[in-house]
Length: 369
Image (cartoon, rainbow, N blue to C red; front, side, top):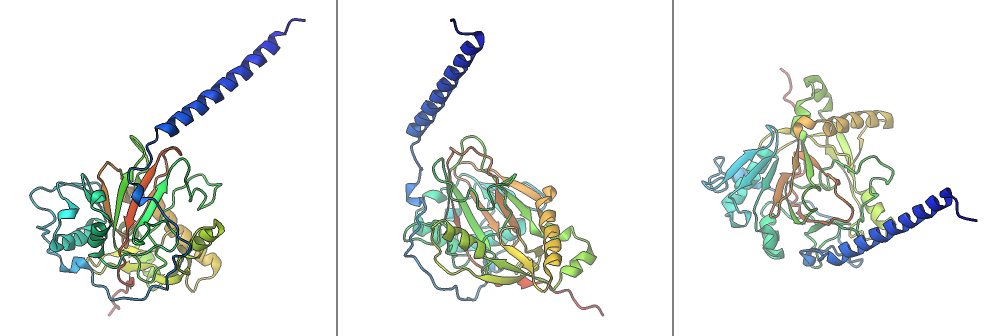
């Protein structure tokens, strides 16, 4: 008996499906063969289980911006081309090489970063300077944080390595796999007693054409938008910042925990030591509760503050990367999140150097007469 039309169509569908799968597999194999690997393999993340550190001790800190010439002649010289992205934060700079700045120029960089919150430097040679020179520049702003769980460069724990490609995505479910978005607003390692300040981030490999930008939001403007009465109610409040979840996540994946996790109370509103600006100091990544509040009270207020920051598109910017881009931001004044909008097979490889700063200064209003 001859096959029916339905049988013929079914056979054709199966054949087409097999052909499509074969084509997709061949395409994936071709792409894998064509992948030259990371451009800077010396910066691939390492996780040494024998690497163990004691707790970080408190240290004296004087912000480099306090030494700066407010006119910034060593930073913003006649070659500098400056373009502001938003009134509240974000400035793109061309014609200035970070590697060539004098100590006075680095002081001015600290001040300008505090004033503009985020600086995007183009056409930099920073990624080719080598480990020691990169660390030397970043150490001008404070002792460089050594991350307790992330990948670093063997022998150089100051480097925090950001790496993802088709075979490696260690943090795909860090905030939960069943979520609509992988955005995660945070300020870096705020669980430390002395969180970071002037932070460096430079790209080694990036998704082709578009994708993998970093979003930034001004914690200063987020605070300024609140009513004076609401601001008063935040005065004196502290929040608990915790490294426990980060450490537990690493342990559960069989990864390293180089230092026991800490939890630290910080003021919800902090004051910048150079500019005197007030900023919210809470973030989705590490802030767990408001000290002295009952659970429901803490959850309610924290949710309001975090939603306010995340939804404030009019005090946010998007930093886009070009080859040779270095982004410098003040971790005391902004939160940020990668925009994970690029395909899984694309490589994103970047480095963060994260100098620590002062114990956060709480805001206290002048007593009324």
